[in-house]
Image (cartoon, rainbow, N blue to C red; front, side, top):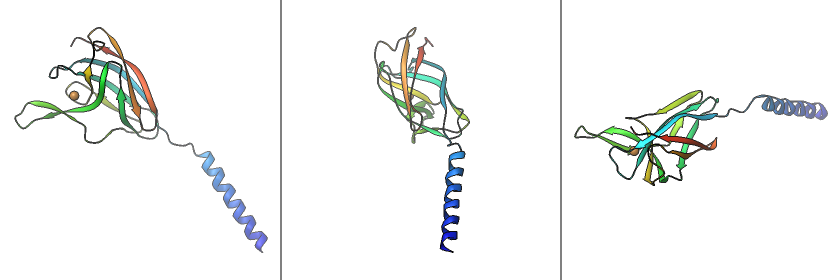
Length: 149
Ligand SMILES: [Cu+2]
């Protein structure tokens, strides 16, 4: 009898291991397209960058931080309507999530990556390097074309 019980336990455990190894682990797959930037219309020492962040994976991911040799620091901002009706911008309140099988568009008048304390690399006609760090996908480094717009 105890042998039979042990046998059942072992078979059950083997089934659990087998099922767990068969199910593919959900993972995000992040890519960045159409990245471009421009001098900030409102802030002399800053630049704005826009892009499409795509996630073709089956798990969400979160944008944690960023860095660029052309910028002192990187922040994710959103445009907001101020009390007086003019437009301003704020640091986003919680980290930007890229949904599974989804995308987030950063565009003029909306979400953007802010280049704080830009240097001379961040000039129209130049292409700069930007690295975004995602919680699960890690670092993504890509080129951003600075335009005169
Ligand atoms: Cu901004």
